[in-house]
Image 1 (tube, rainbow, N blue to C red):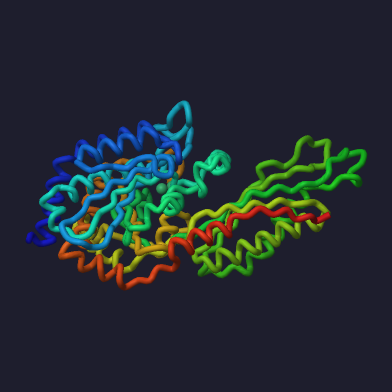
Image 2 (cartoon, helix red, strand yellow; image 1 turned 90 degrees about the vertical axis):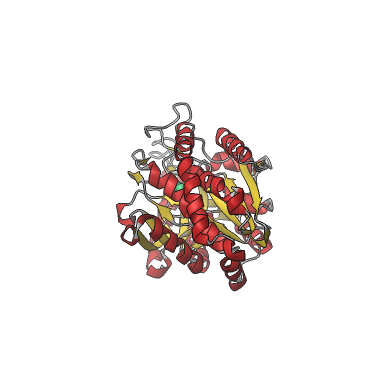
Length: 443
Ligand SMILES: [Zn+2]
Ligand SMILES: [Zn+2]
């Protein structure tokens, strides 16, 4: 039986031999950006690549998701290696699609290429036969929480239930047989160096809010109106008055915007719309902040006698990465780029639906460099593909070899050692309870 080091050397050879192809796959995806649940071309490309490795991909999961499994020679845990299919919408991005403004301003095109690179190595029979368990390669849709209207339309049409790709894949049972999951995201932050191990991310809840007042002549008869904009401003102030109750360690973020402030300046505003996310580092703090925001919204309506409609849409769960898996990944990162080029970030304020998976099983979601510019902005581009794709692919492949090699000794001990926060049915119940619509009559 070859040692893990032998297997990693073999993975290196395979990935190096395919390096040009893998980078060109990333660039093809970059030139064909598609936002969440619309990743038709990207999904087709992934399915073809899986097919060329001799795998039998299943497509059309959560509209555009693709999964292909490869089994080792003996029983053991199933480990998912994920890549995200979707782009953002950033019209000014140099690689934006001129028709849709879609653009890969978060580096997901590299994730797909590195996942395919890892798949090329791990499905090679001389490696696979030395692994236990199973590897589930998954191209997942819609990580970016955008185009809420569009996705809510898909939801109303019964095409999806949740607005993120991973929650949908969970709902459809695609994680029922998975025990461990891993993905690797690009980063442009120079402080995070070449590879960054991280620990937690904020979870999020999205809210769409409508204040309903009564229009009246703003000059002649304001006393007959009910000013919905004043209700919204009062609500914002009430949210701000709650900020002193947010603990630093919970990293609460509430960042509302007004998307409609009135119809005409001569009329008392009667229809004012707001949107906000509420974010937090753990579920308890997130739910507490969510309750306070609802209270503040009602207070605004009540103060001026308006009504408020509050729609709460589940966002993403707080991410908590598995320390043991992160340690194994870190050792491989050091191997690939050297100790001095590996960093650690404890908490990130942003949110990802990998957080949802982390409630259900041990996961890691580290970062790899190679990008420059501001994430989600027009300047975010990949400068170093050999880091972002080739070393990324190797880091994923090495980590699977560590977890599933040696009869999956590490994989089994991690799976056996952690009880998940929630079962899949508890998770689905929580998400369904969180989704709500209420109308509060403040009149
Ligand atoms: Zn992003
Ligand atoms: Zn991203």
